[in-house]
Image (cartoon, rainbow, N blue to C red; front, side, top):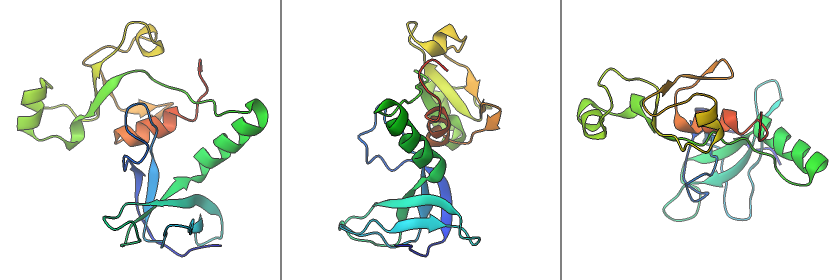
Length: 167
């Protein structure tokens, strides 16, 4: 099936995977998705697949205006990994972070983040991980991943998840 919808946001984290180290970077759309109905393909006006409608966030459990699609580049990587390795190979940065761009001055003061900070603020870096080994430290501000600008933690995690461990 194909469901018509209009994209209203990208890089959405809707916390359906339990938080923590889960990767969420959904495309938000108004395509109808209900229990037992995947919603089908999310396509652009040229008929090209851009995502797979797969989730809703609703107080009733039924469609109420917003649905979420898995971006096609993530779908492709998962499929390729399953075929090649038998499991999903997902990169993991290994930092705790705050999206400083979303904080007001009071919240930045409370968190000890400089007031002029915009971007992803690294709040902690375990010393036994790849991020620390690569030179990332507490207080760093992340603005790009693989030379692509990022504007949210969900977007950053989505880009990092495209890599394999050790990349």
